[in-house]
Length: 93
Image (spheres, rainbow, N blue to C red):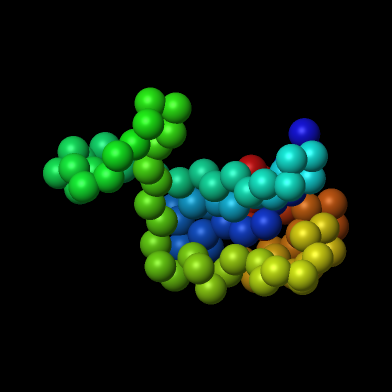
């Protein structure tokens, strides 16, 4: 599995999550964010045992890489540089 850091929330304390990664091996995205545990908020959603619901701030959508921008070489619009080209994002994953 070759995970590539694509984007971190620049407003997150200590450069924590939310964080978006791309898995070169599976061709899928991994999203690290805040787990939703509030049962009232989850009451209208059927969540299988092997899944969870996460949330992230709307401001992060603007930082997501655009399709076709090149995952390995595209700009990291979170204020850092793509992985493999200096420091990854705004902090170390």
